[in-house]
Length: 423
Image (tube, rainbow, N blue to C red; front, side, top):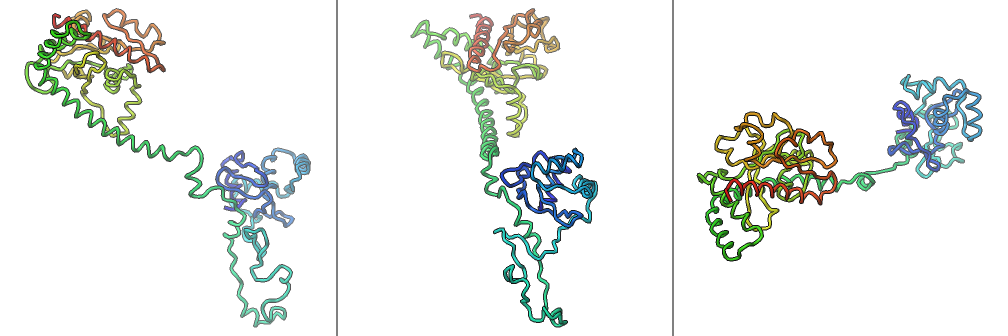
């Protein structure tokens, strides 16, 4: 692009502030770079071509009266735009007119500026030899010369390229700052890894639940034997009580029956949902729901109806599997006997159509939790304080404290299961 067209384009887009003088060059953002003294294609009424610095200086001082403008141009040693050219020049640069007779992209001079900065004679020879005829008959004006002479073609694009100063090419674009293409590669790999991890986790969830059901009898026997041999080991009584509770629910061999159920809200106004409950209960880390949703969406995964969470934050080695659901209406009558915990939203409508008389009965049979940020207002837990619900406070930034909060959940669930099993 030539300097005049570039300047007109930036003026129409109101981006003159992106034209910066660096040394003796005007840089048009990251797009073009031209010498400040480069002649443009706009010819004044006096016959000369305006330079780029003249037009840029005029555009930035267009608000001045002509006398003030002339004084400022003289002070900055910039050739001024003449008074007769002002209006027509502004109309063209502002885009009010598409063309004007003053614009002369085709030079009548059969020379162009080479990349070395010297004038090159397209007819051959040096400047001092231009007066000498290089073709016989040229001086006598004979018809024979006209018939035999060939007007050379001038490569105007080459002339434009000669005065351009390219700032970047294909390779430098890949090396430019603030454009980390490696991050694109990492994001693509992460998306594929997330899909594989989720699929693997879903397969493992099914195996854990099935293994829990198939091996409950043997594990119950081993726990009794271990407790008998070692006596009051840490976590031994809890493990036996939980195993008894699991035995109470093993009424058939169908996958999923007998596994305790944890209910979470399906609304987005709560901190713990089916999207991030696994990270919180298994790993003791709170991950914002929005982040997990975006990760699943990027991996092409939809919201699950049920997931399996393993109790890992216990001191014994027994692995306990829990189902996590967010649709209580999908539970059958016999499924409610397996519900051991619920994360409450703090709204009455969450318990609509539940098979219980009131909140007192619900939270006497089910461990209730309300998770909130520690700096939330007291009003957020005003309704919950009326219920027999454990309020769990977590930090917005201190993730190392999440493990202690998750342990509070497991301790209360274990205590409820011990009481329900009669231990």
